[in-house]
Length: 326
Image (cartoon, rainbow, N blue to C red; front, side, top):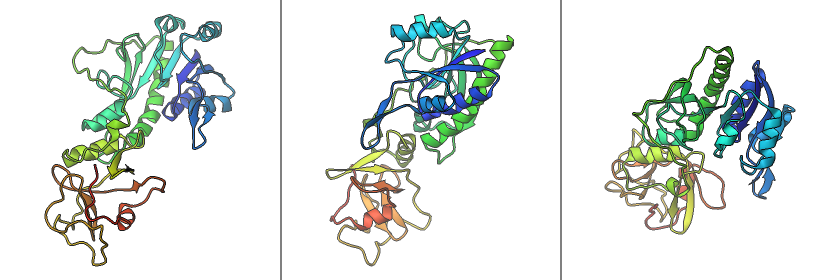
């Protein structure tokens, strides 16, 4: 089939690669316009645009999918089908109607669970054990079209959203090609999603990524993993915003009452009793932070204007009577 692929971020690149290697003809790619990136905030093409350019495929970058110039060009290309993965904009019905076989979306959840922009993050945030990817016919209603196929993926206890999405992007790419093959052969039919089990996965904002130390340890762990690498978990130390990486459980050889190191500085926390939510405790066995339940072992941190570093290295430089994150 003649294919126009729609996608934008790195997670969509495996799908494009799989299509380029398939028996289908990728005649163009649709992606979001170039966006500011890097310290200089120079405009850069999306990962999908970069890959398409490398492959010598025409790249379309409409500001909006309803722009007349884009609509006219898509009609001229006359694709049989438009597979789409993480494109980043709603497609109007008039554009959905252009390809004879419609638009087929690769979505990173087991629909109808986690419809929306951040399905992988929400699966981790809510403690799901299993997730997956789904191909379905794109319709006007958000992620509600009939389903062609699914693949499943276990969520590992230490998975970040980035790691889980990376695996789903690869397995989902194979699913997408198999879906197009089945549609072309006429052997695959879409089936309506069940009415039960619908859940929503709205975009995760920077404020959603601010760690809530007054929650149980399991919720703190999930929140940080769900927001790694994007938008990035963070907390405040006084007026400074500190970026965080995944935490760990309380070390096996540590208890909340362990003594602080013999060479501790004035910033070391009190050495008796469990730390309060957000309170930093510096021990020989690690750097702990209190939660509503058990403390967690602080992972890597990045203070403002500095590099990412181990929590122990960061803690040694603190010079406060009591260190509390919030």
